[in-house]
Length: 157
Image (cartoon, rainbow, N blue to C red; front, side, top):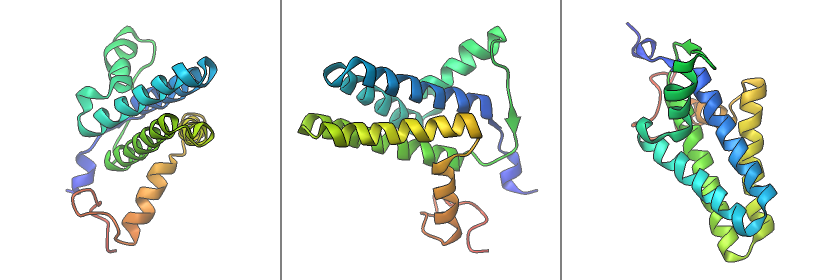
């Protein structure tokens, strides 16, 4: 049995996560630099925590605990490796935390550029089912640049 076939990913949980990212980044922008930086920082923290523990992935938990049980948004489960999605989430977290650092360093334009990159890639994932972070993961995996702890079993083929 292929070890990857044991994995299950609910794409609606991922879409809810992406929707939360877009929502809070856009809200932050609308509310302006002083308040918005805290939305960006909070979203970055949510993504960071969720990268390390699924129970701390608040946007995903919203799908699992609210949207799914109430029938508002059902499951869309697929057999696939969750690691590319986790890698993409970590990339988004890093970019939003860098944006936060830029806010506090006074580099407001750089902060919003980073924030809008994350929001745009999250929106593209929701709208077109294309995960840019997953694409980067697969390219790095293909050429063997990922640490063994997160590389797929396909590496080196």
